[in-house]
Image (cartoon, rainbow, N blue to C red):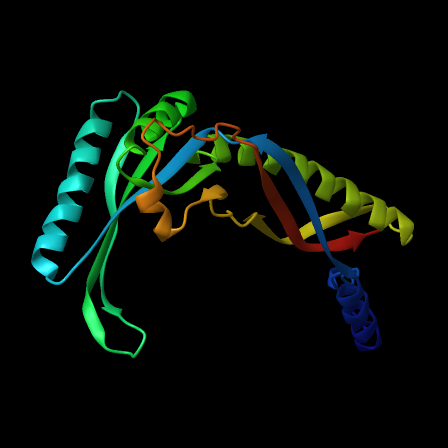
Length: 229
């Protein structure tokens, strides 16, 4: 081969193997959301006692809470556990301590809303109803999130394709993806009782709200796509 042809062949080889320039990239996100009926009820009930000595107060409060837990565990489908227990000094107007206050809670949870409402009504004859809340069970939330993942992914792909065409490209390729479920809100409170209401408890079973309401579930797909010619 004549020497003067060698540089030309080298240039031709380099031109064939040189990779195509990468297209521009876009950062996109798409969200799917749904309102879902709550299927789990949470009732927090409390016992409270005041007196000069902590020991007898603790014993009285824990005795009440343990009795409530024992009664709740006899009801099918209800979970019961001990909640917060606190001891605080009582102060009179001049700032001096006058005895102690002990307060304890029991937490009742169930997907059988009517059953738990009836149980809460019975326990309200001797315990304070601190709060009544509704929320989505873990299983129901996860099932809804699985559906929303498909919806969000389809919407993300459609947006990516639309953006590619809008900017004069034919297609796109995924470069990075992130999937983020919506923040899980705390239980929705429906009723809160004051500590002073303990002494005003009705002698008959108090009605417990049973309207569960809805929670919002969302899934967000975000990522980077490269536009392709």
